[in-house]
Image 1 (cartoon, rainbow, N blue to C red):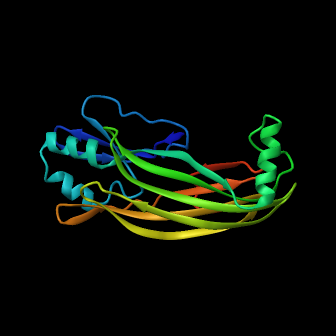
Image 2: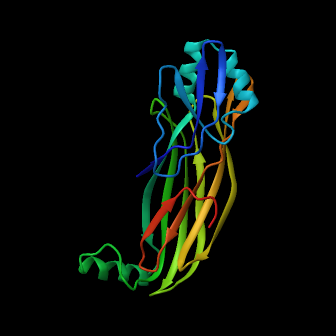
Length: 219
């Protein structure tokens, strides 16, 4: 499981609401808000005029509660199921298992693997989820093809909606099979859309039959 934050800091000043942008944090790093009434707000449009306007209508307590419970503070990536698709891949898996390995050194065949992404609020509740299933084939030492097998997202969090997949792609890069998908979610509050994050998740498969995931938007 990989966790990362891409954060801007919303500082609530005594004289009003002051929103100051902070640098994005690289995947795998953490960013903790520090000091009293400082809250973490994430997303490319975290400082949208619509969000600022809505937050300005709230009391200090309600503003902090909204930021803590309804805005993304952390993205978590988890690895889902990986499946051999043909007899060659199943033989490679059996040979690896017999040798005490999980994947073969010179695996042949085709596989699919799933990577999941989810956004969590500062309180730890899941706001929305999305996934990519990527497929690839290997000739033994070379990845020969790659494709996007499936992708989607969902949310049941009040205020949040899933708008669908907006981008995707697949291909063989540096002898790995890669497939990604990008999704759009929207958060409505006060009669307006106040956030519209567009997260990505990518599957990367290797010639040995192993797979990994990342939040990269592209192959």
